[in-house]
Length: 254
Image (cartoon, rainbow, N blue to C red; front, side, top):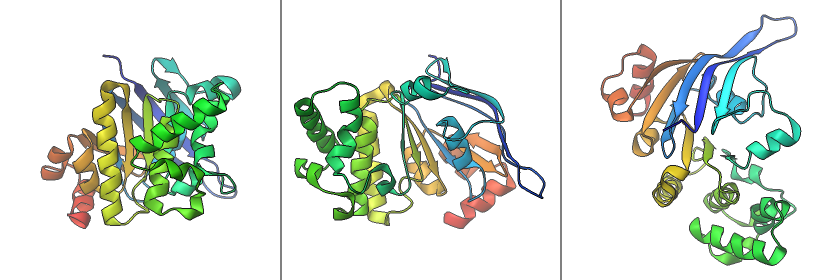
């Protein structure tokens, strides 16, 4: 089975006025198979968020290659890149970032559906279904981001991401701004979505907490100073870490 995502020698170097250039991501390589959940962990500054921003094409690469569902998306721009987002969606650390504060959650969830030609009536019904899948009653379509809790807003953000039926869902610290109880609720929701969609949904899960990755992911990559220093099944990485940085990361949370 072909990977849904293939990352080859991904590198990003930032130029800094009056200072040496800074390489935030350095030769990162990995594959993500259909239906798989891959975790990327590391401290702040390890390069994991820059890696995600490169994959999602929010930031241009310095070198390397990104292949999504068989298509090289490394240098796509404009309309061609917009088409890519039908297959790839992101859920951010701050759920409110997914929504316009002046518009309702329903407007935000349904925006991509209307843009694809769905009628207003059909969009309303589809939004209700998406909210239900994510554990929210239909009435939440009429609420604004500031009128709901962080956990409820993150559920709505996941519903928004799922609207276009993406093959790849990127969760960038999607639980870190939530309290422990709500974290577990969001993880449970993501697990349910994986069970429902099988190989049609793959997840890239960016996190700094290896214990959450252990609960949820099939594989984990450990990043340090822009490089992958360790990878494998979470249980194996936690019980038999080979890298000193991985050992210190595990000791800090377990």
